[in-house]
Image (cartoon, rainbow, N blue to C red; front, side, top):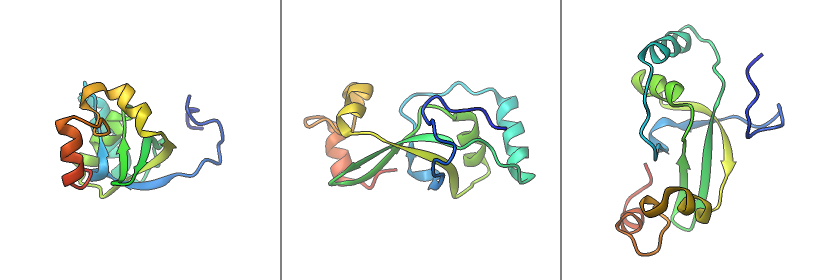
Length: 123
């Protein structure tokens, strides 16, 4: 079977089709092009890949989705222009994302990123 996630302990955990365009990737990825190419072929052949894990933050401004892993699967879906990607959602409070992302967090009160988050739809 598929490898067990270190974050998700229940095999019955819900998997959602999350819009690829809605997921923010706060860390730059170093991609192995061979892996991305193989994942693209697997997706085109109809194989089901392990869902990526997406941190889901709900605020009064809307929903935000962040992924720090699954970069090869995400890149494959992005290059194939997939509208959605299978994902397990991990609900995270804005304060945890602020601690993780530091000054680049859109949830900090007095940052340019916070101002941008108030005026733009999350991407």
